[in-house]
Length: 238
Image (tube, rainbow, N blue to C red; front, side, top):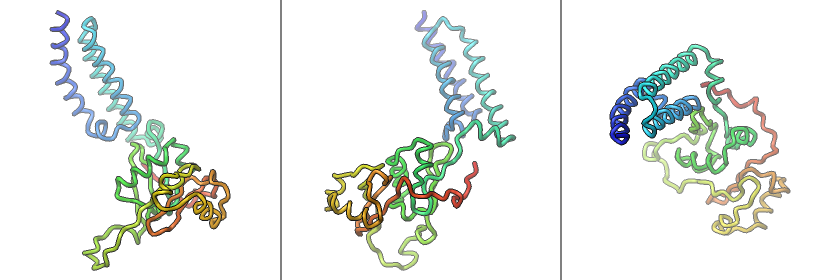
């Protein structure tokens, strides 16, 4: 009997979830900012408990689901009407790269690993931070990238340019740690890396947040202790 009741609940709950999901809108399904994530989490817990435990009154679950949906829409309405409330209920966009340099303090503030950011850059078709004018971690955790004007994409066929191999970063230092395997693959060693650091007046590898080598042999880096003039970084709005 309990099994039949569980099956009946699934048949009634799923259409209701579909209707409520459509009512809540694409934003809560596609972006999942922090508040929407919590709503979905609670929503799933309520539905899961109802399906798993036939002793729970089914009508109470339905009332809870409808109440969650209405509360969600009320909070969204308040966020749209009042920017202060909106900022309290969501993460602020954070600039993580500016003018070809990682902003170490900003990255540490949002607890992102440098590997995550470089992976997201590659997902945007950007393989060297030298080309980036500004990169922002948005409230939903996605990365937005603005290339430097001279690096913005135009096909070489369109401009009649000469087709040459592109540049990309090969990380050889990540958060103060030498990546020996990558150094070896690039035909370099620690002595070469130390020499490069000394040329840039860097005498302690621990101060280097990110170091990379391009196929053309150019060494690029961002340090932890360089003075980041954040006043020059343009503000990012929701």
